[in-house]
Image 1 (tube, rainbow, N blue to C red):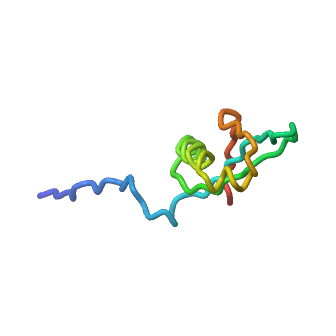
Image 2: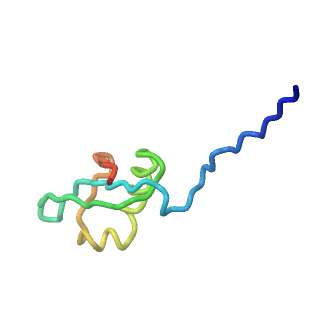
Length: 84
């Protein structure tokens, strides 16, 4: 009897962005006058940690800063929710 096996196909680490889970990452903000709010980012990432890292990077871009009208954002107090 001869047994044959096919080599295991590795799971691709990089998948098309559209097939990655969608995370909603929310971070608290504080405006120049002390008003509090939050900014939410929709991030496609494989894990929660990757989503938090990507959102923190995005939070410091010019468009995100302009959107919150110069309010300070606290990336250390962010939380992520998996969107269904």
